[in-house]
Image 1: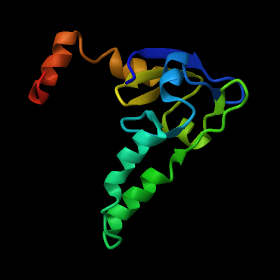
Image 2: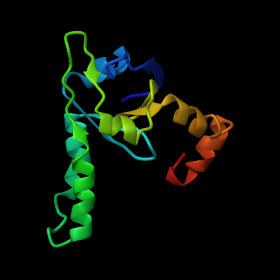
Image 3: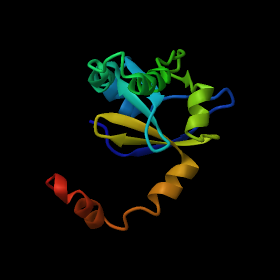
Length: 143
């Protein structure tokens, strides 16, 4: 599982590397894709397969749902790392997440999220004022 946050900056060629603690857990086999709420997702191939397998039963005749599947799957990348473990952040994903230079990696249980630093601060510094509020908001799920 992934927990915690890490900050870094893209280099001049839009390259980044996964933080060492996350990298050790995810291994060499991972995908990068557009996530929800303005972030990017990084998932192991196995985790991504579990995530995406939910669409296997959508009939081809469900045209709107097929377009949703296309929107999701067309934004999936398998990064090619250089000898230093860096990979290029695809421009489409960079734009989608509003990333300029600085990013925040956030461990969210079974995935890693990548946020633009500006959006991360805007979204999470104004979020829950205490852990009590966060836990209370999840009460219906057994917290």
